[in-house]
Length: 213
Image (cartoon, rainbow, N blue to C red):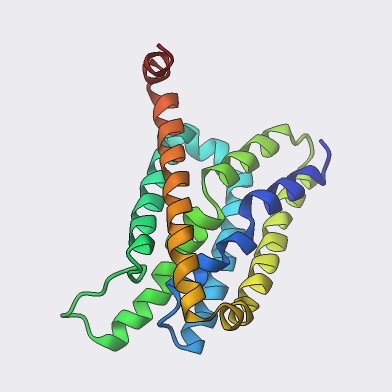
């Protein structure tokens, strides 16, 4: 196995630069401390997901009897919900009136960092399936260890990109961010539909036959 190919594939699939508009949108109302916490949690979670996918991806899928197609459909639903909120320029997660402002903000940072930033925007079905495929090709323990180490590399790159998101926000301004938010929401909706369609076709091949006919 070419040991460098998985890293190139991971950086291309995770693409933290492409997630910057979503990060700016989801953390627009956060304080500096909450934003830093969100950066750390999302980057750390992405690295953990990559490492766990390499170590236990095949075993987990076999144990629960689920397929990547099912995971793909679930991830597509999450993306579609997020895209609809972005198209309406709404916050990533609405807070209930009965929850105090302090506790809601504390919960928001942690929840948004994991879903949807880390999962599925940074590490979705494509990332997990890629790690599972490369893990299946390993023949030595050190190759598997290198795959897990790539999770740390991706987490570091993601953190650096998110740290620079403030400069990007200042360059774009609020109007530019709003425009980009809606455009990215539209793109995200299209990606969500493709994920759902591809997953549903894998689950129900008869759908592909009917579309061709």
